[in-house]
Length: 466
Ligand SMILES: Cc1cc2nc3c(=O)[nH]c(=O)nc-3n(C[C@H](O)[C@H](O)[C@H](O)COP(=O)(O)OP(=O)(O)OC[C@H]3O[C@@H](n4cnc5c(N)ncnc54)[C@H](O)[C@@H]3O)c2cc1C
Image (cartoon, rainbow, N blue to C red; front, side, top):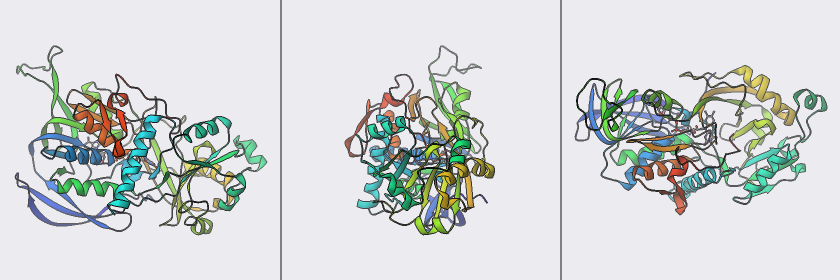
């Protein structure tokens, strides 16, 4: 039943030799969600004894974007991107709902997302590389005044249109749930509807492929199938006494241990999302994130098939729609399905397993109940696929953590919006590498790098973590 839209490796092709280290390099062909084949090179090595200028751990959107922007600025850097999976974008990047929006209450999230969206738009429209971006909009259905106030405040930053409630019937949405349902579930009537225009859906595997292909052309080494087990904290000036580093010694991350050997680098970047703590905890660095499991359920019936691709409002097709209680449906016009999910908070524990499984009863007793209260035509829809992943959740302010400590740059805490902010996060990580106070985002917007860090953090709480 599990059916993640991530890349599916389907055959291995012959070996070639690449780079001056003459490591064996294998070409793997992967297909993206649209059936397009991409060639992925996998370096093969039996034991590593390598030295890089920068080693980036993680080849999701954050690691790839960082590799891209770092190499864009410093063509001479010797960079490795390391991932335990056998190709890129197999972590949470491949499991996301792949919605994008610049509708965020905090200015920081707004800047990160709006600049990234503009960059992705540039890649798709100007460079002509399809990223699967469709501006279908985000429709927010509000049942209380304070949520409407937040929306009106955000409307000063980006285009948000109030939609007459009478227009929702065309989408199969009832403003008033049945009285008994309202009573039992404590639901309220929808009082306001807002359509965000700079928003929609995209295909993260295509964005990842864009960055990956650029990086491969720049001779960045991709070390797939390589699990990083630990960071080696060493003294900057070793004395070769047992027990080093001592508290009085200046420290650095000298190398990383992997299941295939040791890799040294001058700088390490952790783009490891929800896995970050496994590497930072043992060396006493706090990544400030917690794992929250997130699930998506693909649903389909005749109504969905007919409506999902239709221009119901002024957008390209049915909008990404957020109902009261946070339940959302993400249209997938190509598959003629909706993906339904919710960012459940209290009640959802912070546990972590390597291969999280979706819970059918969670759909039945939670997501479905809210959906059918407000959208009766989907009540008969069958679940045709489901998958689960994690948010690396910043439970304090809902914005990413991007900071540098020693020679380690950590970029995590994407809190459910790492794809739509991925380009900007890579630029901030690059600015940190360069020791810059301000990171220049796409189209010239600037952000203080320290604001996203730990010690001098300066961001407002994000109210719209979905
Ligand atoms: C159900 C769901 C819905 C979502 N919906 C959206 C959405 O609509 N829009 C949006 O923008 N975002 C969404 N997100 C969030 C988004 O998926 C993440 O923010 C984003 O993918 C984070 O990217 P990343 O590169 O940091 O992490 P990942 O893609 O998880 O990449 C981290 C990589 O690090 C590697 N790694 C970790 N530890 C090690 C190690 N020790 N050794 C080697 N490799 C290691 C992993 O293998 C992985 O490939 C959603 C997430 C989920 C789960």
